[in-house]
Image (cartoon, rainbow, N blue to C red; front, top):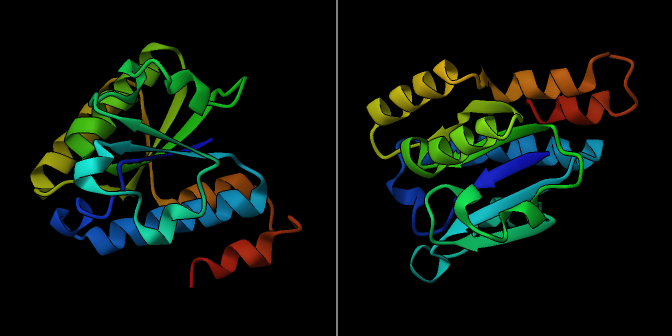
Length: 169
């Protein structure tokens, strides 16, 4: 599954390279839709930070409004994960707060966690870099959005290959 963490209207303008983060998260979400991979999202205090940004709003099958930094600390979080989810592909903001705490929680529960480095962001690039390193130290796999797409496809003969390939242009 893909988990979009707190990619919200009032937060993204403050994120370093926020437009790129949203574009890469959208690439992953679009490919997920094409390939039948479930997408869920969280929104940190949506009354203050607004809803999920428009380019991503149509993709989540479910959205969890939360106030906890780690989505796992919200009692409704388990309903966001499809039954039997093992691999969780994570994109979102802020890398060093909600994304990292959620990633660490997922790892502690035994999930395979894949952090999409070009689809996460923080206000300060140094915070993002340290968050990526810490997630890696705890066992998360660090990838790019393009890596995710090709790993999902696995073969250039995949029936959706051309459609997914278009997302890279």
